[in-house]
Every structure is written in C-alpha cells, then in structure tokens.
Image (cartoon, rainbow, N blue to C red; front, top):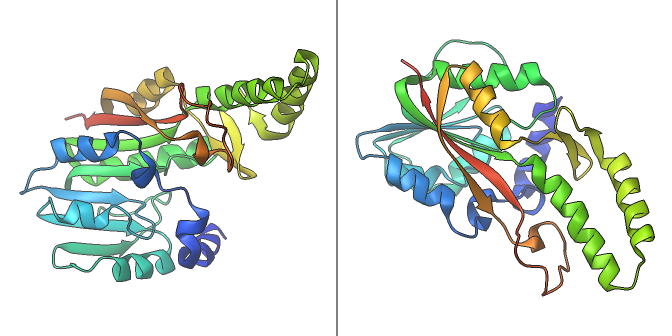
Length: 252
C-alpha cells in the first residue's frame, strides 16, 4: 500500500515532499558528506526517493547505490541524474529482511526513520547495518521532537502579536496539540496529517546504539520558518526549526 502511495507521488515529488538537502540553511548535510566521502568509497543512499542527492554523491564516490522501494521514484531518479556510469539503482524495501545488496563505506539515510511503528524503524536500521562494512559511517537525518513544541510556541507568539490574549493562545495551542500529537511519549506528531516519528537528541544515541552503531555527532540542520508557514512574518527568525543530522559509526 505505501509503495503505491509513493509511486503516485513520484511525479510530483518536488511539490509534495520537503527537500531537506536544498533547504538546509547552513549546508550542514552537504558539508558533512563532503568531509566523509573519499574518491575510492562506495556510498549507499538508503531511501533515495527521486534522487535529489544521488548526483552529488556520484560526483564524489567511486560507486553509488541508490536504493528505494518505489519503482516509479527510481525511474524518476534515473531521469534526473545525467551521469550514471557509477550509479546502481536498486528496488528494495528496507523494512523487509533480505539479503545484503552492497557493502558501503558511507551510508545516507535521509528522512527515512520516520514511520510511527518502532519495529519498522528498527528493521530499517538493521537492514542498513547489514549493507555497511564494519567501521563505516552512516549519515542520517531525522525530525526533532523539540521543534514540534517550538512551533506551537511561535504560533502563540504570532497570535499574541496580532492581539490575541494569552488565554486564547493557550487554548488554541492545546486544541492543536490534541489534533496533531499522536503520542508524546513515543514522539509521534503529524506532519501534513501523517503521523511521523520525531526524536529527542538523547533518544537518537540510544536508538542507534541498540542497533550496533556508535553515535559520533548530532547536529542541527536548520530551515527557514517559511518551510512551516506559507507567510511567515519577517520577525520570525531565530530560533529556526531544525532536524537532527546524525553521524554514526557501525561497530566492528
């Protein structure tokens, strides 16, 4: 069912799916990958979608595996990448246990560990681990739970600047929380009506550690408030919304 949904979205991917790589205000993901990838490396983009990062990776690595479970997304990705000599497009469902398809030096896992089911997230990370060599680096981007709360606070500030009372603001924030927060203890908050896993920084360390990784770095990937609001006011600047970018080492 999900594969069919992503197949239908593939042709309108840029309009429907937020582009983390392009909207990263300080190019944190780009600079992290540039620092880690060497010219003799094999890189695997786990959950590549329509290939937004594939050409960037292929220009720096010896071999790139672009993996996704949507056949249509992979077809679009192949059209989007003009140079394909060192790129291998593979259709795989990362949440389904299967045979190893590569042994990468660097893995990229951007906005993939976001489904609400813990078992699915854990299986994906185990599949990723099986396809990384011991000591390999994994770069992952995941939503931050703190931003869900920060967004409510900024909306409240906005409404107060427009003249709403504090009592009115709190009531509106509570109504929004009731509608959008599926499970605070599990970090499940809706994005565009879709229940999505969000992470605490400390939770990331535990989750990756339990899957056989050592977390080396956790940094913010910041975006403009225009990513959340179509008409964000000029005064709405710092603090900006962010995701977490994680650099982890697969244990020996």
